[in-house]
Image (tube, rainbow, N blue to C red; front, side, top):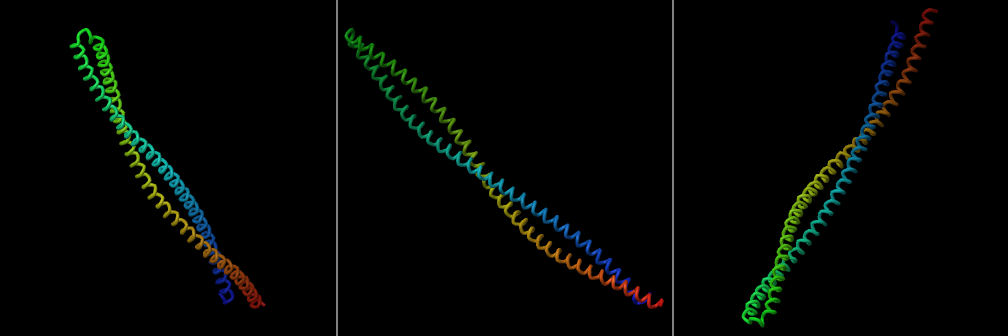
Length: 234
């Protein structure tokens, strides 16, 4: 093989190599594009996740505020029931005192004989009224105690709910931090992918230009080989 044929062969091989390199560059560009799309999708989902966490955190805060309001109302209710219990105690003492006074009055009326009969009737009615009052007050006191017991249980349940809500808020905050870190990583990855794509595009353009140049070289080599053959044959 003479030098011109050797040059043509080398040019052809080089041109084929650049063609294959161009194919690989195209594949790299496609892979980078796919990577950018995946990074963008991951970033979008991370943003959506962060948004959902923010909404849930807001809901948790609303629940916490509602529970706090109910707890305050329960505390106020307990104060009122204690005041009512105090009033019941006073009324009970008054009823006991009235009952005792009516008993003494009945005794004095009995001593007075016929003259004290009318007074004895009044004393007996007062005694009955005090007994009824005492019984009614006792029933009210029982209801109050039962209500207080239920309210205290409700208050304990609300405390547990409030604690769960606070724990949930803490978890939401930690999750939000994680999503923020993921989002930052995705944004950084997206920037790196964009930078890589720019570099690969530049490299692909250079390879493409070199490929065109070597195609010209190959054509020139072929023409040179053809011209050399004509000279040798002539």
